[in-house]
Image (cartoon, rainbow, N blue to C red; front, side, top):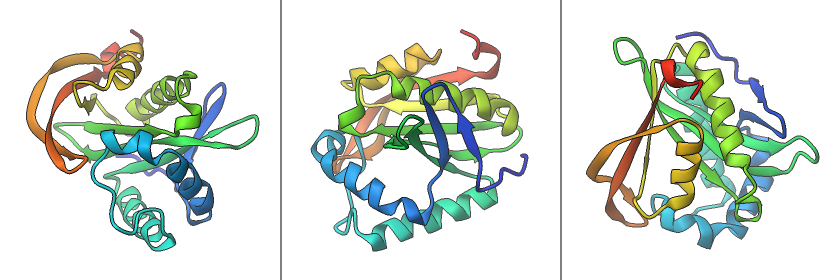
Amino acid sequence: MAYVPLDTVIPAERLALMAARRPDYEDWAALRAVSRTYLEPWEPSWPSDALSRKDWQRRVNVWTKAWKAGTGYVFLIRRHSDNALLGGASLTQVRPWPANSASLGYWMGEPHAGQGYMREAVQTLCTWAFPMLNLARIEAGIVPENERSRRVLEGTGFAEEGRASAYLEIAGQRRDHILFALVRADIRR
């Protein structure tokens, strides 16, 4: 895997993806707070100190360690026009040869949902990641009723591969997921 600097910025037409940093705390906490009811049904249970500075520091420490090890890359998504934080996207469980694969995750703040930002961010991140991280495939999983996530994945070329029983803990329960993948050779779809 190639070395990826912590100050990496991946530009897109309307937005940019950049590594989450300590100074992002207030924007992150504010957006997550206003979006909590919207996000919680689709995410693992929030810790008791969710949105605290301590929670943020813990997250940034873990994310930075994974970034430096080449096993995970967590990005925040900011809009060019006003630098507003829109959401986040990540490539985690980055596995080297022979797998050359990673798992995609993402979230969008409720005020920015439905405007095509996530599709743009996912497309941009995947286009960057295949050559930069030498990936052959990027995988993603969604709970079956998450139609917005399905549209993001299908709209960026991901193909449904099947169903995984009790795949992840979401909102306090083990949930089945529909699995998708985007293969490097298919990125132009």
